Length: 328
Image (cartoon, rainbow, N blue to C red; front, side, top):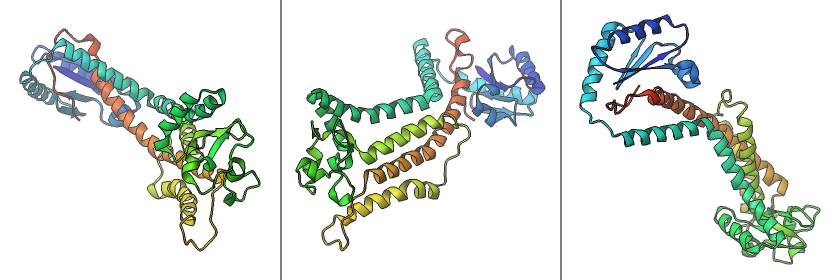
């Protein structure tokens, strides 16, 4: 039977509970595992005001803890353990391995997330690099992979290795060569704009549109910045998130979309690369602001539980009986 004692340095009540548990070893044999709540912020936050805390089977005891409380709880947990068949050594090793892997992820989740986003937003830039190098097959594969995720319209995408970084439609009103002038294609032929990947003169388009690139770069930049404020940043309220992240993007995108409908009474509006980038960045950054503090809180709580589960496991006696899951 496994008994977990949450403690911290210079805790006299913890010493008393430890001594009482040692005195009950003959009456109720158990493996005593001590967990210093200072080792994990989540454990400190959860138990700082109530230690010593004893977890045994499904039972939790918080200070003040009497010897009678301990004796009754140990007896009840011991009875529950006898009713469950022991797990095999292989099952225990597999469970420990899974728990250790999960613990490692909870400690490094931000690095994993940032690496995934970096690869996800970086791969579209590899497509024009490969096109420029003559590796059209691998480049085409990247365009195909990202096609379901983005409209890939050439007049709303960035270009590499060309005369301009972008070729917006004439309706955008920018003092640059328009998409129609640069390609000779109909600016209202969306299918042709999606298929057009570029040439030696105009360059080759990135496999993600300008707004999507900005969204994921915003997520990546904010995710990297979150590493410095992860225990202090609080998520915004939903109205603030909507105002900062959703409203600018919706106004820019919807006004552009609606103006293209037949019968629209005003002039057609085409957004600019700058506006697409700014609204995309705001959306990406605000999503990190909303999601990552909650993710950090969940990971911290999971770390606390896993540290408790794994404490003392390396020193367990061979083939110990299975104890009930620790539940608070």
